Image (cartoon, rainbow, N blue to C red):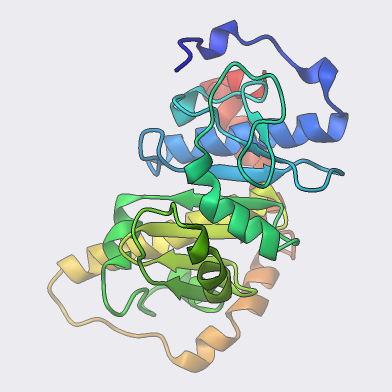
Length: 258
């Protein structure tokens, strides 16, 4: 494995289109945010984004870098089989792209696929009833949630059709005994969805640990959650929070954009 670090990677901004560079900056920011909020599992999950204007090309993290180290220039361009398409000095984990390639192939509306092994998410994924309707956050998740049963470490190509069928047209997918997955028409949308998903799981674990009976939100309220979410964000979705998140990252460490 390469011993190069992020400081030795020169900027490739001049070698890619403006659209690809912006996607790289946003995707690197997403990796940093996942690390900031404590959802990363060392180097063992992935966030992918489509390369704008190019069919079947995606960006993924360089395998071995911590999420807090990822930069726009260190992201690796890969094809649908997880093969490297550029001369990046970093390796990739093709096995880790099995889930992502399945989703990207089935959901052409998904610009970004975000998968985490967050502790709260895995804890709820191990519960028979999954996400419970006990919080406002859970209401938004339940309005567009699928479940996929555990089939072992995601290395089997034969699992792909079952995974994509369970996701369908939904935004949220709970991988039972495994973790959480969100998709979005933008990186910002996928991140906001994951923030809400993880918050719902965190609240559920805390509520269950309190020992008291739980109050459930009526099903008819969940049915209208999508419209309420659009109203609450002025129909901007992730665009509403993304600029503020980038400003926060810039205050902490702006190297993600290099």
